[in-house]
Amino acid sequence: MRLVIVAGPPATGKTSVMLHTLRHILTDKIRVAVCKIDCLETSDHSTYRRLSLPVMVGLSDYICPDHFYVSNLEEIFAWGEKQQAEILVVETAGLCHRCAPGIKGCLSICVVDNLSGIDTPKKVGPVLTTADVVVVTKGDIVSQAEREVFRRRIEMVNPAAHVLEINGLTGQGALRLKKVVLASPSIEGVEGRELRYPMPSAVCSYCNGETVIGSRYQMGNVKKIVYREVSND
Amino acid sequence: MIRKIAVLGGITKSGVRETLRMVEIYPGEIVAVVGPTGSGKSQLISDIEYWADGDTPSRRQIQINDQVPAEFAVETSLRRLVAEISQNMNFVIDMSVRDFLLLHAESRHIENALEVAKAVVDCANQLTGEPLMMDDSLTALSGGQSRALMVADVALLSNAPIVLVDEIENAGINRLSALRLLAGRGKVVLVVTHDPLLALLADKRIVMQNGGMAKLLTASPSEKALAGRLQKIDAVLCELRERIRLGGELTPEAIKEVTWPDAQRVSA
Picture 1: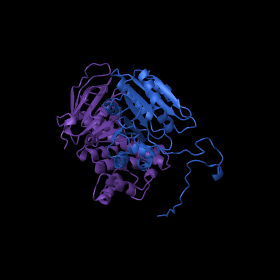
Picture 2: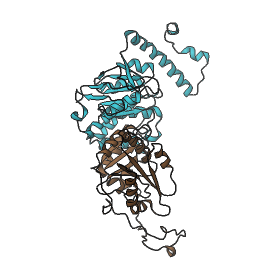
Picture 3: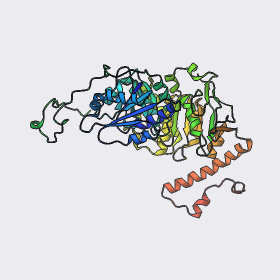
Picture 4: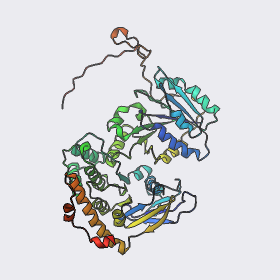
């Protein structure tokens, strides 16, 4: 089974991009299953179901969705095999982007959009820099020049990536992603495989549900801010 | 160096062979793509942008200089061959015109960046009635100014040899000059349009029907003659629009002042 990990900031069009890509893949009679990891609520599963695919949803609730995802990967993989899927797509909704869900030896796709500003490629972090494919959406509403600058910025932080522009509304460009997905390696299982980037140990009292502000209420891995003067020029 | 783009016919939405088996387009040519909604205009544009090789729903193949794209260049270079301009595009970066053009020039490793930036602004100002300045903020430009800057940037800075234009409206930018500018730089220009003026300006006109390329028209001499009259009508409408914009009223006298082009022959 090919395991395909899709990640990226919220509202960049991860689901739309994958819907168009999977539609192309399904024309080849390939069995696909989708797992969507979100925090509190998601309606993306019903969007995926429109393609009559087996869809599973995992809600991380009070746990960081990326940590939740990695601690459930074996179970998700087993579910995909039970569906006899040839391709299992796992779409995650990482929040702070200090984590990257990519796994060594599996295709990792990061979706970003042209509207998010040209500094985004630098800010997104490991989820973008460790991806095999960076999909750029919303190119139809910004100028050609901005698209070119944005693409250049992505290539600067991740020179090895395949940068693909896809229109999430019309699906223009999604065929390219289909090619990449079909060319990705098939794996036997996930146990023993490694994440491409370590997930930070962000276990503090607030991760565990603390709501009151103040040092007295903070336990675990707490890091205090180091002030830096910001000059005005 | 692109000498020719060829679109080799595929299938219509009904799965039958499309009527036109091949359309050839040369640098410096303007090709209009016309047809009702759902007739396949966007698919044709997207086939070219994708460098289709029989692997899109239309099964068309695009060739460059009689070669399949994969033989002509590697995929990453192929993607740099096409620039797009449409009515829906906006500048979203909060920067001055100068800084942005310099940034764009830098991303393309252009050496005399400031000179090129100035040339882009001069060029844009020949296309729009409302001059824009180097220090203007990109996001504060009017629709017409933005479109003019996008066209000038594609013409002088982006340097992609193929430009796909999706219906630009006639507000604040001289569309005819814009298309002529792009074609004049030796680019292949495809424009999706329903506007008779733009359609007649084009060297060729592809008529889309049910997903297929149904007809290839070239403007006949009588159509070319009509184009001149249409331009005058267009100029009249532009003048009236300008009056409205500046707060004027369209009194019968005001309308009389505008020179009507050969009114009787047009109504006949």
